[in-house]
Amino acid sequence: MDWNGLSDYFDGLADDIIDDVPEVVAETATEYFKETFTKKEFDGNPWAPAKKAKHTGSLLIESGNLVNSIKPSYIGTDKVVISAGSDKVSYAQAHNEGFTGMALIPAHTRRTKKGGIANVREYNRRMNLPQRQFMGEANELAAVMVERIEDAIAKKI
Image (cartoon, rainbow, N blue to C red; front, top):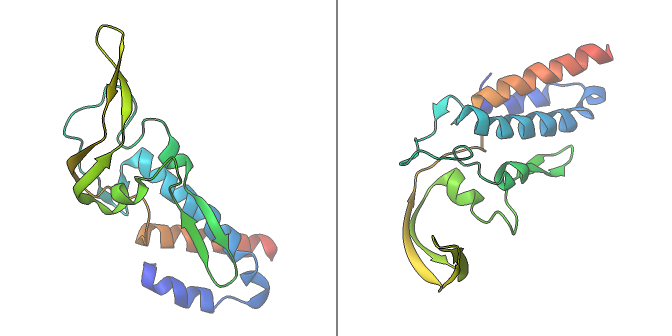
């Protein structure tokens, strides 16, 4: 099943089944989007590799804030919305869609090699983030949704 056929599939479901579908869709989509961080690919398309190997964490995972920000923001019979990002995770869209341009780096402190603390002033930085999509329309996700909905239907019968 591809993403475009999913709408027709939902239209063909019986009314007594359709009430359970939004919860199944929200749970399945959230799980799929979080799994992209483990697989480092989206809908079968691998992410661009990092320019420098990381010593700790994984690609797009350092604190876990981005992955943990993925959650359903609206669940209704008309639609399900899964969102990512928050005040702590303002960079979610830039990673998902890619970003090229100037970014304002706020003033902050940094530890020095001698163990002291240095104040760093606000500055602009040119950035070129490749797209590493972790959310969106995915044919793999559509197939998993249909499978889980059919399992839910079978349990009701």
